[in-house]
Length: 358
Figure 1: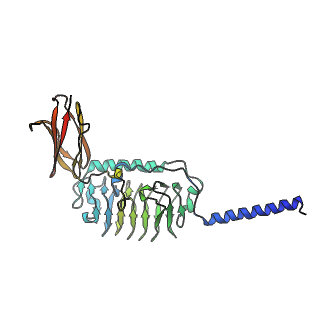
Figure 2 (figure 1 turned 90 degrees about the horizontal axis):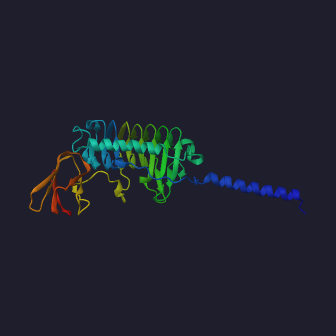
């Protein structure tokens, strides 16, 4: 017959075995702690650039960029080794010294760089402040780990070495990595997405500079305070955006997230063609807004004509930069009726019918 003391000892032994099993299991499972869900970082006009830098964009041929390239405030001459044939998009510069085929768009680039600063600060200030498994995971080296969605913070350098890292979640999950200093990815390392995770929802905020090793495969948008360097053969599905420094490539491939699958049209910030949109509202009284898109810098003429073909108003007649624009026609001094707005820019012309009802 067991005494109370014997029963107590037996219970303690069972409890010890149970705790030991839990601890042993935890050591071999991927990180499963949960974090407060994060919304994506809003990139604004910067979302339209696959590569965006401040001082230099250089390439050791032959690299391939699926998307747009922008450099500001450095002059276009600081885009070196990169040709239009290597860019499936546009190269935007602040002046006429860029490579052949580049487009002058100083205002657009200023806006994009401003939005990059906003996005960087947003990512850097996200809360709640990471603790536990989300603070310095892997003691700064996340190679070999499987990371659930959430906000991670590194108080020094973040590295991916030794083994690949897996980001496991669904298509709406977001990962944000706050990195105090550098991001270093070793040669041949891959960032693997599992469970439907999307590169467009992964953001690496880097306090100084990022270096991606030879033949590595990387996912997500890098928002670096200083510079981003890709070694030979590095491949990125994401964006490379450097606030004050350079982006350097070496026979690298960089693809805008979603380009090879289904791209979110809300991220298309730079027009790919000339367009004159239908005015809104229409019919209207007494004013209406007329929106239009310019694929390249052009002299733009927009005028309004009455039903007899007589010009009644000149709305635009000047050189304008690439981008989305709008103008307003105040028809308070004109009678009700049908009018036409006509736009000319470069080799493009288009007209829309306007209905003024008073």
